[in-house]
Image (tube, helix red, strand yellow):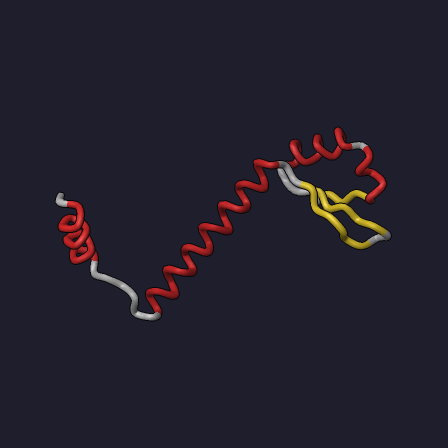
Length: 85
C-alpha cells in the first residue's frame, strides 16, 4: 500500500507512475488522515467489474434462498419455445 501526503499531489507525473507501476491505488493523506484515493483507470475498471460480479452472485444466492429458481431443462424448453429454436 502506498501512502503520500496531500502536498505530493502537485507532482502528478510521479503519482501516475506509482499507480501504473504498483497496479494498486495510492492513498493520499492530509494532516495524517486518509482523504483521497488515486488509482489507475485499469485498476478502477477491474475493481468495478469485480463489484458488479459480486452483486450478481449475491442476487443469485438471494433468488435461490427465496425459491426463485427454475429447473434447467424447463428453463431451456421455455427459451426455445419463446425464440422458436
